[in-house]
Length: 88
Ligand SMILES: [Zn+2]
Image 1 (cartoon, rainbow, N blue to C red):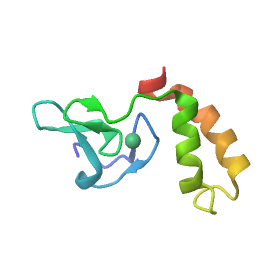
Image 2: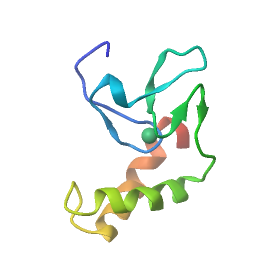
Image 3: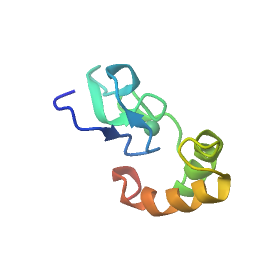
Image 4: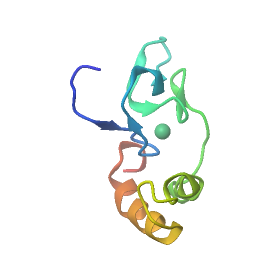
């Protein structure tokens, strides 16, 4: 990483706190915008809408980490996701 600032995947908002979670560009270099779940070899691993992405993320962030329940998680992501690069 070129700096120590915490980065988040610009598709699913997962914290990218180590090189290992970074996606890969078509030339094999690491993507600093997207995680490896979302982005491999220069392409998104799955074509989906922002709402579909939010729904698939809800189970992973609603068990108190960081959101207490699914409703809170969904609401928070509906505010955050439109600001991410992929969904702008
Ligand atoms: Zn991602």
